[in-house]
Amino acid sequence: MRRAGALLTVALLAPLVAAAQNPLDRQIRENQARLDSIRRERGQLEGELTRLRGRERNLSTELVNLDRQKNATSRLVNELDRQLSELGTQLDSITLELLVAQDALAEKRAVRERRIVELYKRGPIWAFQVMLAAESFGGLLSRYKYLHLISRRDQALVSEVVVLRDHIADERRQVSRVQDLVGRNRGEREQELDRFESLERQRLRSLRQTQASAERAREQLSELERSERQINTLITNLERRRREAVAAGRATFPATISEESIGTLEWPAAGEVLYRFGRSAGPRGTVVRRDGLGVRAAVGTEVRAVAGGEVVMAGPMGTYGPTVMLDHGGGFYTLYLYLSQLSVLADQRIEGGTVIGRSGGQATEEGPHFEFQIRQVPRTGTQPLPLDPLNWLKPRN
Image 1: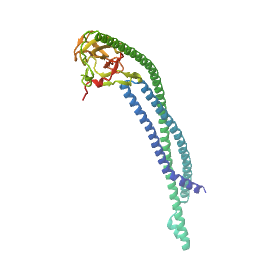
Image 2: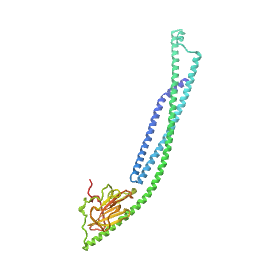
Image 3: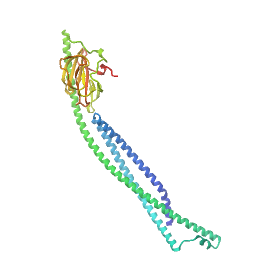
Image 4: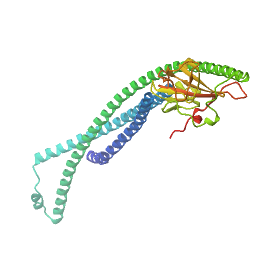
């Protein structure tokens, strides 16, 4: 009965030798693929954050990125926890199979040892002696069958011992492999928890900076609005005096800009268009209304008048910094903002193409640039109307 039970054990364990490895390998590959997928996603987010920090810094976008990185890291930690639990179950199962195989091997070795003792005590059985001792042909067949069964049993015993020994070696390798995976996953989990805490600290810093930046942005927008009101008041007063002079018959210079100038004015300076007229994204995630055209230019680039006129202002203008305003007659005015130096004086008459100053803007969120505006006071009104400069400047190729 014990021999039959041992044979049954080997029969049951033999398929497991091949079956146990493939599912484990497949499971390891699938687990690694899930981890790699989450890591790739987080790597893309880290690259996106690096690109964000390399460009104009948008703290609100950075905050969203950090939140997404935190989410990816949390998913990675949860996946590692799941895999650790799965590996623990797998380790228990393999360990149990190993114990069963070791018991079966011990039993087979005991049977083999008894067989060796029997052979030692009785000596080898010579086939010709058994055959010659037969008294009849039936006895001969019985003795031959007996010898054949003994040989088959001995061969099966040796094969069972070899199979069990190899299976135990495989199980031990799998136990060692799973233990290594558990150790590595635990180490990765600790690293991911550290990363999660680091991302949380970055997020809190970014949140505080965002809140402070939002407050600064509100202050800047308020200053811009005050500067806009100041410009509008100045233009309104100038246009009122010009109209009073015309009504009184006093001579005024002829207009150098009119509706016929649309699409014909020279650019104040060469440079990439940084922002356009109208509503656009402002500093730190805000939305601002642009009354002019932002042109990127290195600090110190010469900025020229687009047409002849009279300098009605040359000096600081709130957050716009050094500013020049030209009256071109007929209710048209041009402004050159974010300059670093001024080359003209108030009440000075200049020709088109005259250098009126040099670009600046290095202290702004947009970086070195200047802004060009065109304003017109309608004939039937008093409030200056900002115009889109791209409609008045010559088209670029």
